[in-house]
Length: 280
Image (cartoon, rainbow, N blue to C red; front, side, top):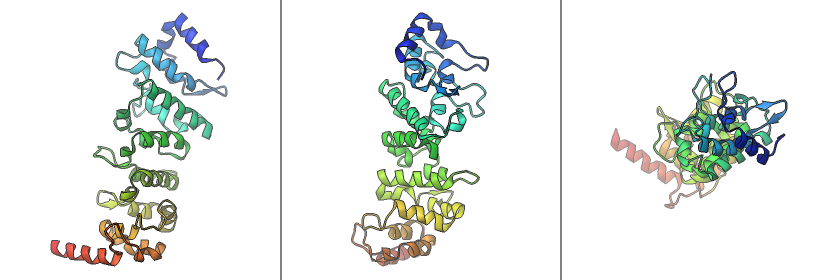
């Protein structure tokens, strides 16, 4: 960054109207700061601009200094926070880890200033926005702050693991692994939502269909190693019996594992068959 925070603050104090001056495309300075221009980025000044913008009423009283202002000409009517959370290609930046880390640090500062709120994660779908290989730091920031956004609560949004493997989506393998890894970190008892269903299809089955069984199982085995702590075959028998044989090929020792109740997969299968038989 060319200027220091002290210099930028001094400019704002001398010319407070500068924070409200829109460019030829109607963008506020806090929005222009998200872009890369001549190899430089002003994104690190976003927390200062938001804080001073709140004091000066930039974007209106409830717009948090321009953070909730819709970015002009954005086809999805995304606001500044969403642009800060999304992959680099939407804000003109390079595909670097540093680019991602800087934005994660900005989000942390906004949280410290109470200008980014936990409720924003659900309201604006920020975990979904950051579910991209070039946004790993931001994705980890959001999921560590609000793990339930991975699928642990009722939501109008599809679970991120399903979002990761939508048809026609690029980078499906990397996104699927990001979602499953985070899900296992915070919800191991639910196997990271691997078997949660959308329109009757589990995320596991969707991954098989979209990226292939071999590739999907390689990712699954990386995120869910064979263990009594998370007996995957037991879960498959309970929630996705149609996938039992496919999964068993990649977890040959899983038949010998026991769940928290001490049951083997064969016992669980026997019980589930009885249960399903009563329903038919």
